Length: 582
Image (cartoon, rainbow, N blue to C red; front, side, top):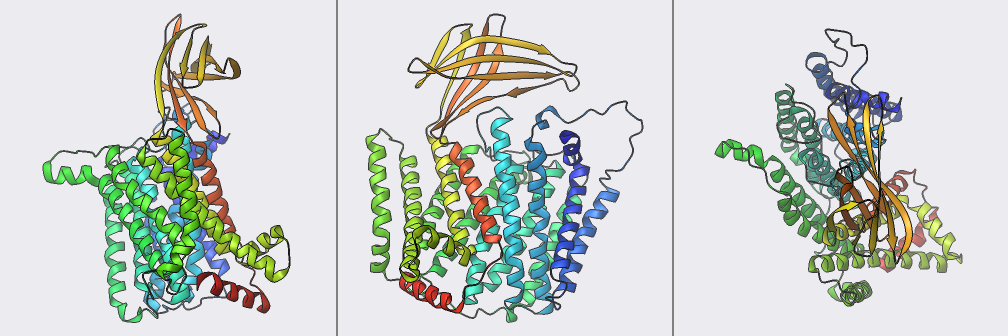
């Protein structure tokens, strides 16, 4: 039954219908939430939302109708593609799909604000939560997709820079920049033009992602079959960009900033740097994604860039982002002197340096990894030390214990401390990526029954295979016993499944996960007496999933209703803010 339900969004027609249904649901929620608020914005915002809904409705009716009948009535359906018969199929596509249409709401409010000239703080308050909701769905969808690739596709990795993967990542990156710059607009009345620009770009990228998945214009293991919807989507993206930026330029006189960046050593400046780096990463990924189209237009040949292009271009940008995150945590909204910043960064820098020395003493010689771990340790220490200072001040001001101070701070300012948790989750994801990409080990072994082979500290013994026949498939299972220091620590079973109806085979990998590393086993082939395995050791991969869970937890906390402090609490918070940020 779960897979029967998942078949609804497994194809092009059903997923478009889900897109339309979700946008209708989000529009309904907005209408109910704001039925007595924002009366100057709501008519235009809902009208824009319905126009976008109408576009998808026309596509469904005339180009991709899920209710169109087959010319014959089959006795039984084909069922899902075997690669899709996994529990993640139930969650990953609808989660990612929810991230695309939910960003229609911020776009609609931004355009409504431009149309009505209501460009003050009113629309920003409404947009912030919806940007965060879309960001949550896109982030969760990308994480679930990476997990799916890791456990289902059987190649040992979780991110291949595939065009459809990139299409889900790019709007998430730009909306990350938007979330940070919206803070500046709410606090300082700055970045007004910049924020509307980011909203337009993010929404256009969500439509671009929908286009890539359905047009077949770029090869992808995640895309649907080639369809005739590509020109309609490209035309729609053109209308969005030309119409939105034309209206933005027309309204520029109403978008003057109310303040300016006080110093290049201030929170506003670091958030601007954060924005520029995120856009640089997005632009680099976008160019690499559409490069086959560029090369075909210029040279007449579709030439794709390799994975190494994305790794070499994106990695330095993401490392710079991590450093900017650590520095930004320790600067105030007003000017911070170099001496003051140095004092604040001394302890995080020292701890990160000490950790790097320990890693070198333990034998780590990969300089990319050492730099990455240094940056991650620097940020984690910066965040935790800043958080500890704020907790200690509350302990002293309220005469309460540390746990109570921690939870009262969290309840008093959920967006602020939710952001701390999100940033910690991002750093843990970075640690997982750095470790798994820098220290992975791969080995191919061929064993007879009872024979052993070793990979690092593990000894693998082949215990034989079992062949099982089912009405729809044949399953070959190979069993391995795992030893360390002559001690049995577990067994792993890797399978190869052959589906008769689809004439297709699917690999079921076996994974043993610890906090240190994953032992990842793929059954590559077999004869009557032997079996061949591809064995990988992927260090620190589990921290990618732990970090993702922490990131999503922080997002939920930031979205919770905010309980404003009492007047006395506010005075204490303002005094502490002045003491910690200058």
